[in-house]
Image (cartoon, rainbow, N blue to C red; front, side, top):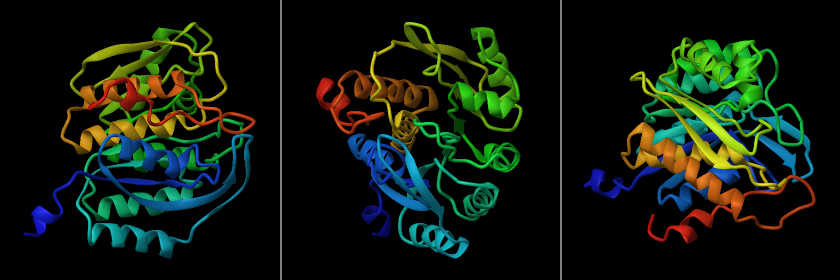
Length: 274
């Protein structure tokens, strides 16, 4: 009886809040809801943030983070989870400890390092901790170009660089790598995907001339998490997530004075029932 009650696909976001509503846990939950899964959350940090920038943030205590994990794992049946903003090396380790303790399904790591407005969201000393301790637990990691450069200590300018970086990231122990090309300067946004089985492919979409891209990485990784929780394979999850984000950027909404949020319901309106 308990399994019947707890059978609906459930996901978990492990990240920071965004008081402006466009990124972080707020974007994660909105996206997961749109993909028809139930989302729980473990809050690692709280930000004072809007479309203009991050004004302040504070990370939560180990005790409170541990208790959130215990509360979720003690009641819900999480089929897939994701990480976002983890603040610093200490909090990366707290999250890693809990991920090893509980069965929370496949892990998608969005290695959040810098906010859209430029504010740092991951301390420099935490990058090595992410590479050493978090990535080996991950099913998929989804760095953008600057994040991939930080993870690999290399400059990425060409498609060949993206391929080399993905292989280098794979060497940390993560199974699948998606390097996002949104920070490039071409007329198309092109991402590179390297899968555990050795398959590689590129995903491209026309670049939309807009500053309303706040929360893009959170949204992509959350859509991917939702699809995996529903039982879809990694490649299918990545392709749906890419389409979801493309629709959310293309069908803009006018919110805020800076880097505005995505339209999280756009994909459902374009593809009813999907």
